[in-house]
Image (cartoon, rainbow, N blue to C red; front, side, top):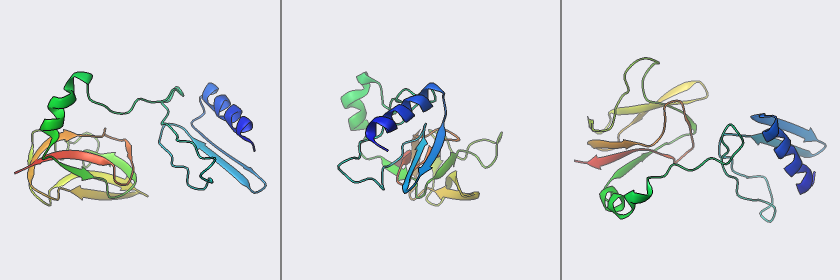
Length: 159
């Protein structure tokens, strides 16, 4: 499959709003999944192109950013914050069950070892705990959102 055929296939999938597609032809296997950032791991480096996450409409999604006016002020405010990162790939949940209150919210004081959220991976619920005590400044992902290994989940201002 050449680059032109691959581009046409992707354009067709976007046009028909198909979220996931897999094609196997001989020794070539192509899998396209929209809506998440996918790393190109099995491609030779000279043919790999950076992939941008797509929104459900097929338009490249904008990364989560702060407002332009937040610039230098937030950079100095963010200094000294501890970032809790996802130790696994999975789905982020803010509460133990649907309808129950979140484990933590911005402004809450937490202690080391306190559960912050759950990440579901392969039908297992993994509790993610604070690795230090402090105040939750910001939750960086949405409830039910897929998360990657090392993705920031929370900002904590240490005690």
